[in-house]
Length: 530
Image 1 (cartoon, one colour):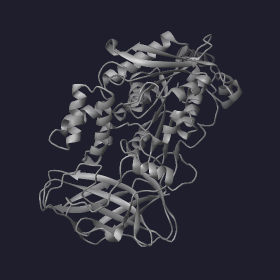
Image 2 (cartoon, one colour):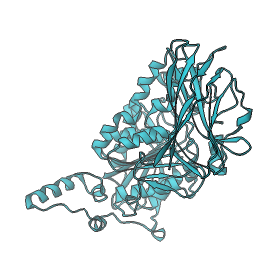
Image 3 (cartoon, helix red, strand yellow):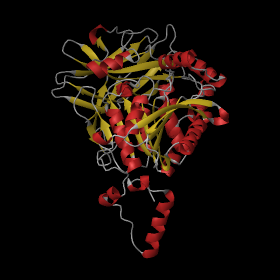
Image 4 (spheres, one colour):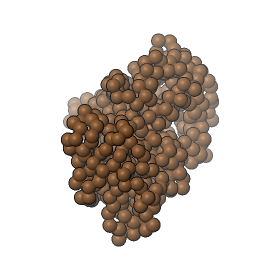
């Protein structure tokens, strides 16, 4: 029986089988109407009924006996069992990261076990970057919770931010005891996250490496892979990709589907480390109960204030997700459109039945003017500074800006549309196709889409890097460039500008001195619109 409905979330697996067998013997169908589900739901709590809780700090024996520093926040009354939620910490964060949210959940009737992943802070071991040992650790933490707390073995959830999100997804794929997951600002495809467009995301890698070495102890293997990514060299990248693939839940999606795990994914449009494209693609591959939320912000900034216990959309919906899928509470989250987007330009959340249904149409724009650039020289167009730029976008609705008329023609290819008479609601993933000729076999282009006002000031809508290797110098070839997904409203009276150069501080590039790239025949821009 599918675990899609709330009733099957809190009923034991043995009971589910018994009901199906009984129905078959008596010739009766199993009814899972909303009223039937509600009568079997676990007790819920209101603001005036919050349960007294206890907090204790413990050491848990992880895989191979490695000590994991943990804390348990749970209802003080242990006379009955409660759903349990396991929270692996984020990269470089201490074990108290989730303490405010853990208390809120415990007051509602959950046992919360949060632990420092191996290699960080007080936990023993070495950083494995969500490797097999990390997943084995998470399963040991579940075992410990079931043996040492008032945790219901049939009602298990996992959640986390960033690193904790990736470990939660991978653990749920390996352990069918996990019924529901909320993965915030995480990854499903580590290869796509670190190497999108065959371009090493050196700024993000440097940030992760710096924090890792400052707060933890990378294993020899992890240190080697991080150094390869930081170096920007391509001759050893093939050593990293299989390692990253092993740590990607997208490659284990069949197991998540077989387990019928309820998966909630939340990310920000401007995530500097794990861009939203890979989450959106992963979401479409899931067959079970699922939800995708995308909103303005950068890596972990959308849910960050919730760690302080402040009101927060991501954590509020995470609570609702677990209330429904672990407790059987009919709170309406399953009746909402499963894809929830918030435009970077402001406004209310928009609901869609699927990610593929987000754009209702695609505007195809053909630019025919030839352009040629010196890609080794930066034009001034850029995606901004990791974290800072997207946080400004989140809190001040201010994206990186540039004067389009002042872009040097030798360093950037620039095409512009006519002014729009009405607002253009960009929703989804802009793409570009162009034919290029390079005098070098390798190179990098970075594509930017700007909303340009009457004064020629362009505000960044989307961007994306793409590198090429092994091309015959002087021979034309086609580039298909996928930008990062976005939701942005281009005001009436503005035009769109497509800009392509070869340098951005966020990425390593493979351009050389005196290299030229020609865009003969212009470019074709595809803009997804609501």
